[in-house]
Length: 177
Image (cartoon, rainbow, N blue to C red; front, side, top):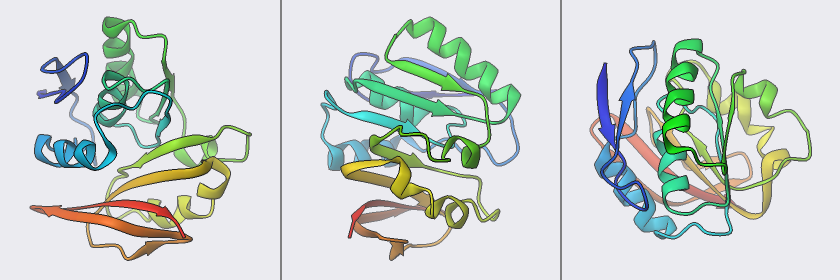
């Protein structure tokens, strides 16, 4: 089991334990620092969704930076158990956990988010699979963060506004076109 640290906000430098699970790749510190420089350090007023939560680091970073609400969705029972332990330690009522498939969660429900994190397992077609559901999840003016094994130009009606690369990881900030 490895550990990663929260890079900013109220819980800065707190460690998150990462379980060994197939396809689980926590977003590296440097990438998260870049992402939150793009987004701004204060996420007050934002409702966030970490749709493929894994370690939960993106969602916990958002909550640490003051997001009003953070939903973390993870289907792996082992990863979900670890998420629950961390959420219990932080005792933050703004965090809600869901143990289910990302596509089932993304079905139309009326839930809308200002910021959506997509960091699915690579090579399984998850980005293409969830693309058609993004309109149902996104609040007006929402932003989308996506990691992929290749650079993206678009994701459906979403256009890349910023992008970077760290090793094998291509990371993107997108807005609705």
